[in-house]
Length: 240
Ligand code: SF4
Image 1 (cartoon, rainbow, N blue to C red):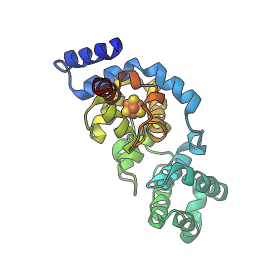
Image 2 (cartoon, rainbow, N blue to C red):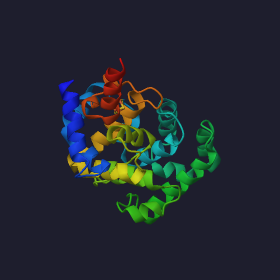
Image 3 (cartoon, rainbow, N blue to C red):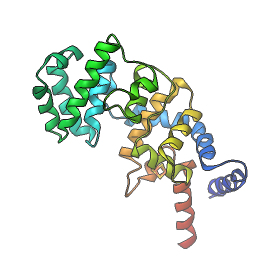
């Protein structure tokens, strides 16, 4: 109880000095170890999280749009077995490539993937351009995929934020954050060395623990500084 009171006092004091985004990144910075330890034990292992290069990352991200990771996993492995190199999808019949995306109801994604991959091969000599503006000019590469490529392939200091991360950070900070605010929190809170790993850890935390309808706060590694959790605890104790 003392810890909770201390936390609420900190929150009240900080509210005069900082906004919710500021609070969130200060508190997250303190919890770096906990997030990383949790991720070592509970992080999900997907083939696209290995060293798969820009091509593997791109294929995975095009598949993951509106598709659950567990469903995309099987398809990704099948696809990479048939098309292990980017050159192959440019020289193949587009309809053959499209049939894999049809399985997840996203046939138009295949065309965009083919266009993007072939553009990288022809205009950038087979190297992904490590520049946000150039990436956004590629067909089908929106803000999220551009950031994933910059972070995971180019090693640049960019966070990539999906609905899972927005939910975690919004509950954590006690404010409904925009995509840009959530990305800024992560980019400010963590060094380049940690950012990508913590980013992926938070994706998993949102997917496995901080669920949309019923978050498993008691199992959450960052609960002690989460505003949502601490507030719900104090309400519980007050009314019971
Ligand atoms: S303590 Fe609960 S609400 Fe806060 S981040 Fe963890 S699971 Fe989400």
